[in-house]
Structures are given as C-alpha cells and as structure tokens.
Image (cartoon, rainbow, N blue to C red; front, side):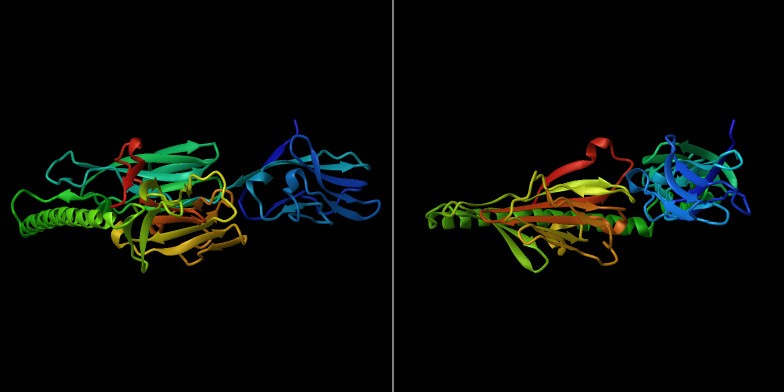
Amino acid sequence: MDEVKSVSVMEGDSVTLFTDLTEIQKAELILWTFGSDSTRIAQINRLINKISYYDGPDERFRDRLKLDSQTGSLTITNTTTQHAGLYQLQFIGGKPVTPKKFSVMVSARLPIPVISSNSSQCSSSSSSSSYCSLVCSVVNVGHVTLSWYKGNSLLSSISVSDLSISLSLPLEVEYQEKNSYSCVINNPITNQTTHLDISKLCHTCSAPGLSAGHIALVCFSVLAVVLVLCGIFCGIFFYYHHRRSTQADHQSKPYGEENIRLTNADGETLEQERHLQNNNFVEKDEIKSVIAMVGERVTLHTDLTEIKEDELIRWKFADSKIYKFAEFFVIAKWDKTNNEEYLHDDHKFKDRLHLDHNTGSLIITNITPKHYGHYKLHITSEGRDISKTFNLVAHDPKKRPGTILRRETCP
C-alpha cells in the first residue's frame, strides 16, 4: 500500500508539498494531480522544458500554484477549505518511480470562545453548595475540540468533525473560588483561549439585614414605582386629550385623514398618514426583536419577494435600547432605479454589512456587542411608504427557544 503523508495548513496560509528530492528524476513528465479522480493541476514537461498549471475543479487552483523546477515540489498559496484532499506526484517516462501521495487538511480560522453565565443573579455565599453555572460557546466551527481547563488540568472537552456547527460546553464552579479557569478551542494547527473572570460572571448575595446598600436599593425601587405610575397617569391623560383633539379635527377633514406621529430622534419627526384622496398608503410600524449570539450572522428581512424599480431601501441604526429616544443614522441604502448602493464603513460596521439587491434585506456578519440595538427599515416609492423596526439583542441562555422572536407595537 502506498504511503500517504498528512499535511495540515491554516486557511489563508501557503503550504508546500515537498518531494524530498534534490533533483528531479530523469522522467519525461512530472505530473501533480488532485482528488480521487486524479485531476491534473500542474506538470513539468522535460522534453520541451515547460511548466504548466491548470485551474482544476471550479477553478479553485487558479493563480494559486507554484512548482519548483529543480525538485518538483508544489506550493499552494492562499489556501481555502476547497483545497483539502488527496494530492499525488507521478513520474511518467524514464526509470519507474513510486508515486508520492499527500493528504492535505485545511483548518479554518478559530473564533474566540465566549463564556457566559447560566446562573441566577446571585446565590447565598453562606451556602456550602452554592455553585455558579457557566457555559463556553463557539459558532460556525468544524474539526475542532472545545475544552475547559482548571489551571493546566483538563476538566472536560467535546470534539466535532462536522463543518459549520455550534458547540457549547457547561461548567460549574463555586462562588468565591480562587482557582484559574480557561476555555480553549483548538484544531491540529492552532488554538484560541478565553480566561474566566469569576468575579464578573458569578455574583453572590450579601448576608441578611438592611445595610446601606439595601436601603439605597429600596429607596430607588420606590422612586422607580412612583415614576412609572406618574408615566401611566400622564399617558392616560395625554391619550384622552389627544383623542378628543383628533375627534374634533376629524370632523373638519373632508376625507377622514388620520395622522400618527412617531418620534425619530435623528432630527426628524416621522408622520404616518392614510390619504384616501390620493391613494397613498403608509404601513404601520412595529418592532420585531431578534436574538443573536456574538459571532453569528443575522439577516433582517424586508418580507419582500422583489424590489420594484422605483423603490428606495434605507436601513438606519441606533444604539439606544429605548425606541422613543433612539438616535438613528443611515448605515445602508439601495437605490434600484439608479443602481446605487451605500454601506456604512466606520469601525463598527466595516466589512460586516451586505444588502440583498433582490429583496432589500440587510445581512450583518460576525455580530459583536456593539451591533446590538435598533435597526429601522424605510421602503419608499410612489404610492407606498413602509417602515419596520428590528431590535437586535444578545442571546440569553436562560430564556426558552420560544422567546427568540417577539413582536411589539410601537408606542
């Protein structure tokens, strides 16, 4: 049986398949093939002293191959997972030589593990059995091992051979514990490590009794309740006052025109109106909550199957989690009429935004905590004005899967 030499390389790096020869054998043709079907990818023709390269399946080797004319060694540059597989070197003509075989494995870049707490807000420090539940997670990985370490000692691990899968590994530690813990993801080439800070993720309750902190918390809670009640009563008063004003104004409008005002704190006041006179229709805005983990890819859908020629798509973003006071700014725009696209490229969204030119949907890749907030969609055209709002929030492991999407009506 022919010996197969295993070679590993990180995605994006170069790899050289060495022939271990100081000089090419006296053969008429030195041939490199790829895959189980032995597709020709490079060769040296000694008869005419010519080196040739071939693009291979799906042109995956185009401008990526380099042959050493002295030794016949093959270098593959800027590798991707498509370049993983079996490579074979053959000598044709001249003295018979055993072919050389190489099995190349290309490992994707590893993400940084994310450690989060699965515990309740606090636990009594006086209890001898109080533990903090943690979970270490990674997304979109393959051919890796995820492990928990206590110091240099391995506690637990999980491995996967599939591609593009999410992994989670739980751990329980005692509150107030002083040991050093770390979560490590690794493949045969490299690894990524995240160290656990117990003081930040695991909180204990203080002993019973009314300390100064407790008193301050009680006072703050009472004040918050008073403010909420004031807000409710003020809202009721405003509602009935506005309703009476609207009814009075309605009688003076011959076509039953209805106005709804929404505050948009980027410097403009958004009015939603139904004009029966000129048949313009403005669709009611509502907030859809979307939950995503750090590192994930998220698509905010417009619910359109195809954009019309005269429609303009605009996406805005605001950091504020309170819709009324959110300050929006434009991060993406698609003008189908003029075939113009705009994508915001500051440090927060650089190379992370993509627009679907068929539906106008917004795609955000490699989510970070800076991307959580409100995303507002405006679709404008002759006779139609649609406004939708999405609230992108962090993944909470304590919530059930059924709470991933929530629809709310804007105030």
